[in-house]
Image (cartoon, rainbow, N blue to C red; front, top):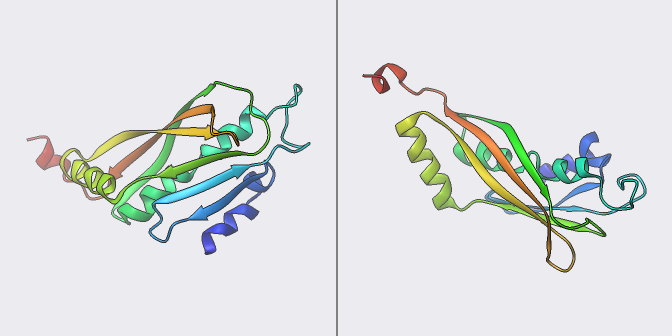
Length: 151
């Protein structure tokens, strides 16, 4: 799939982040990060910036692909919590259901814009959560009638 070309994008390539799986409806992405000499910190574990970068674009991509061109979707902010040392290969799954996408569309048809928070859990090979990232994505309906809304 063409989307895997993102693995050659310098911010991904330079951090060792690799998109491993995309489902055909663009509702699920699986990303891995191997620990290498160029992405470890001074104490030998994953550099925190790489862990954040691992979570950066995926929910935005899912929403853009599934909401369509009638919506503006942008990453807004994030909050990261380091729970365990990140060693070895780490994995994170980013997924929304078709039902959740429909809920978001319905909500935006009513209120016009909203910030959505998605929890990203980065796990080690043993399945332990080593890092949590709350990813906040801003979504706005392009043609929302604000005059009608304000009456």
